[in-house]
Image 1 (cartoon, each protein chain N blue to C red):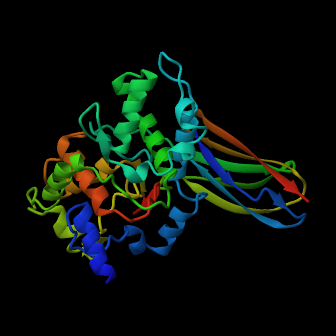
Image 2: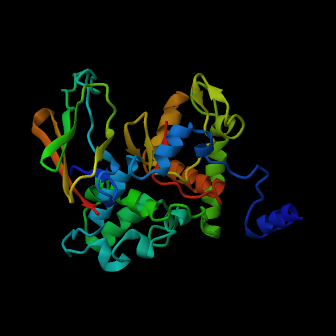
Image 3: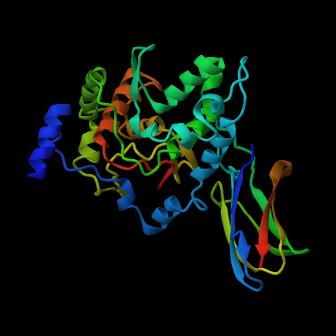
Length: 106
Length: 253
């Protein structure tokens, strides 16, 4: 079960800069570590994170090995219209997780 | 005067503890780590709490029963304080049970889940959710005479030298807490923050995993999971932490 915790203010004034925190459950296996039998564990990391809001990508990041498991990404955007913010994590082995949070702009 | 009263109260309820009041390892951590633990939007342990809260409502076993059927919509409804009061005596097993064992027993007895399936990742998530419901409450292990021999045995094990390094738990975590072992800070050895998210583990883990870590650290053969030694030590650690707030899910380096 993939879980994510996305934290942002529920309401914001138009033009206000808001902070968004996105925490996701992921092992971020580097591909360099051996298991107890000595076999190298295949790499399993998140490759890309992106957040879409008001019809455009407001933030994206490429992730690499050596980023901790369960990474948290904190970024800012300007509140423009009420609507969904869609956070998407994509990674090795076809991993995709999407989390939709709603922002109300007053 | 207050001290005399405390000593008298100690005489009335159990053995007198000559040590200073318990300290939490939280106070010794960096400010960044403290902030990570305090803030639910940064604390990765909350991922397990969230999963546990989802499992709370899932119907399981042949009787299709969920935790919500007996214990309310969330763990905080009726089980707030449960984590602060474990390990506790289980009449059917006639021995103390830890919080995780209590949850596993509940799943076996009331949901009809098979014993092996009652453990594992689901149990850890449920334990995290139930422990989280007691966050901030002081540890108050049950005042139960049947637990006394277990606590005494746990205390003896705590003070017993172990392994090739010939060190006891007490030598580090009582006598040298706050000092350093190599580059690492020696924590006071609290149980009140478990299950705990350790950066070293890159995940959430129960108290017994931490105890195993310490035992392999002193080059001793760890006691088996769920053994009476582990259980005694957990009973002693809960007693040693009495008064400390439950921090679960804590974050530690």
